[in-house]
Length: 172
Image 1 (tube, rainbow, N blue to C red):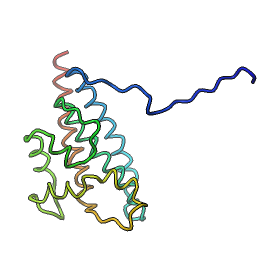
Image 2 (tube, rainbow, N blue to C red):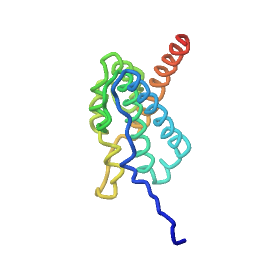
Image 3 (cartoon, rainbow, N blue to C red):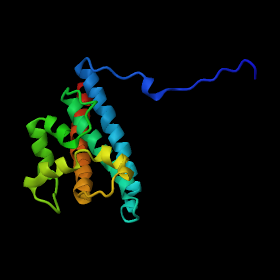
Image 4 (cartoon, one colour):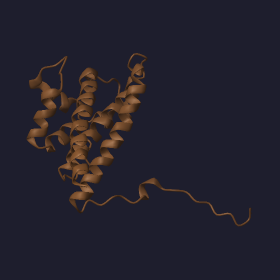
């Protein structure tokens, strides 16, 4: 194979979407929402990892799904949050009405509603920390709050995106 040419793809060189118009933001929100759903599906299929001692890998997935769900809402609000990963920071970028809606439906089963933001702060960097958990002597976190958060965000975003799809279909 004398004349064969090798090709490879450098992932970080793939073209990124631009966010120049409301339509761009809405499309990015839809993409983030769909991507969050993919990570949520892994959580559903691998839930038993919580009891098998492989929970850090699952929590990485859960935390990333939470990040993407929040980002999907932010993109719909025309907020560029692509370089942000902290859950509390992202949450704080949301309009008050959305923040209140999320907080209201989150069960806070092993915590109190008035600790919601503190719980988010403590889990804020979960996606970043869990990926490199092997570098830490130990990890402590509220796994129940994290699981309830992903379930809450999934429910909340599904209602937002389904309502918006219905409006878009009526306008067609």
